Each structure stands twice: as C-alpha cells, then as structure tokens.
Length: 395
Ligand SMILES: [Fe+2]
Ligand SMILES: [Fe+2]
Image (cartoon, rainbow, N blue to C red):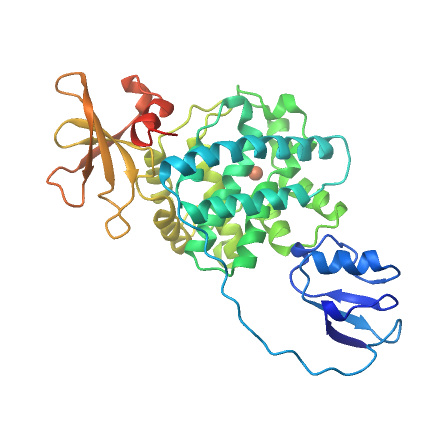
C-alpha cells in the first residue's frame, strides 16, 4: 500500500516505492528500496526530491498525522541578462568544459562502461542558464567547431539548440531539461562504430552506411543498459533520423507517428550538421542551412516546429554574413523579433571598392538598406572569429 509523503518526513526504516518528480532530478535509478541509513535519507532530500511514495506494508509508516504546511509559491530566481560580449566569453569556457565532460562520457561508453549522466546534467543546466542570459551567444559559438571536435561539440550544440527550441515552443521547463539531455546523447549509438568509419571523409561502402543507420537502435540499447528511464531521451535517440514524409530511418515513421521531441531533434541535428565543419563536409553558412531546410518543410521537417525554429535562431542567424543593397557586406549581430528578415547588422566591407569599411551598426528594420543575398565569410577572406571580434569586441 503506497502513501505519498513529503521528503522531509522520510525516516530510516521506510520503504521507498517511488520518488516524486522526474527521474532526472535524482541519482536513484532503482527507485524501490528500504531506507536503512540516515545518509540515504539525506541523499534523497539533497537531490531536490519533493515527494516520495512509501510502501507502508513493506516498511515503517509515518508516526502521526500532521497538519499540511501552507503552500507558498516562490518565484523562480530570475537569471540576469548578459550582453553578447560577456556571454560569448562565458559560453567559450562552457564549450571547453563541455568538450571534456562529453569526451570522458563518450570514452566510458566506448570502453564498455555504463553511461554516467550526472556530468551531462550539469552541462545541460549550464547551457540552459547561458541561454537564459543571452538567447543566441552559446548557439552561435557552438556552431563554430574545429573538424576534430565535431563529435563532442555536435552533441553539445544540438543540446543547446533543443533547449532553446523547447523554450520557444513553451514546453514545461522539466521537459526542456530532458530535451537538453536527449540532445547531448542523441548520437551515443555512434560510439559502437569504429572511429575509422565515423570519421571517413570519402564515400562510405554500403556496409558502412548500413552500420551508420543502426546507430539509433544501438543508442537505445546503451541507454537501456544504463537504466536511463527518460522517455524523451530514448525517443530522441531512436527517432532523430525519422522524417515527416516517412523516408527517414530506422522505421520510416511519418509525421503523425512522431513526437514533438523527435521533430525538434531532427531539426536541431540537421541544422548543426549542415553548419558545422566535419569530416567530409565544409560548413554551410547558417542562412544557407535555414534556406535548405525551409524548402524541405512537410517532406523532411515538421512545419510548426520549423517555424518555431526560425523564431529561435532567426532566418539569418547571429554571425551570418549578408550582402546589402548598398553593395556592402554586413554581419548579423542581433535579431529583430518582430521583423526576422531585417535583423540588426554590422556593415564591414564595401564590395564596390573591394575594401574594408569602418564597422557601422545598421538596424535594417529602420534603414532603407536591405538584404539581397547571404554570403560565405570565407569567400571574402573573413573568418568567423574575425567577424566576432568586430560585432562582439570583448569576446
Ligand atoms: Fe544521429
Ligand atoms: Fe547528430
């Protein structure tokens, strides 16, 4: 017989049948056990578990009925906003530590050890906070990765994108947290493949392709062995290569059979793959990726979720190089939420004169100038880092 009590009412001798809240909040994978030490009681409380179901037939009951404490709703502490420059600096550090956390998590799995998600959860929370301080900085920076870092940083970039998109879709914050974790581990099944196959730049053999297409189900097995009971993580792991027209893999499910989480993952995963430099692929401009994906709405991607994605990263994401009608090149430095086709930009180069210009910020929403095309920074001799140093100078 189960009874629901508050975590502060727990006592040694009680039999825990179920912990309240999402599994994600606590490190107890096996949630049925007898409390036989004060340490265990404290562990549950310090993990932030609010409520516990105890089995009063298998263990001790509450000593006496108590008057319920008054419910007081405390507001979430607000995260102070940060400037783009300041957040770039913090996001840079976060990406560094993310790389090593993900690196050791992946190394463990490759060695056949069980997946350990506590470090991953800390990373999800840090990414989440960064995005609360500035909605674009971490996303823009996570896109810029060295080819060798792709496998680690792709996971982190997808995690950040999924958190941001989940928020645009106004999903509950608990669900967004699980989505972030799902993003971090969506490709975990790839760790069962030989590195030579994964990093192969030239075309793969049919057998190698076949092996790659098995990574979603391989991932599912890894999560199961780790006793990771997150429906969202399992769903995303298995279904992030499904496409709404049924031409994805492994099952060829169609849009109505896919969850919103799988649709979010498909979009974030594709966007990061297209815009990243990785073995066998030269990175695309973020605007080119958005255009490519926009014409594949209803075939590859879900319309409603993609629309929310354009509101999340912008039609011209931060750092995109645009050519203006005035024949100047400009880099996107902020979005105009009300007018996504006219972001705030910084003009830095005159195409007519083939010469750099003194940087000038232009709000296209209020200017006569307008976007005529997007460009590749590299074609004009500019790296992303160099552009960033102009539009976020302290970064
Ligand atoms: Fe994948
Ligand atoms: Fe991926």
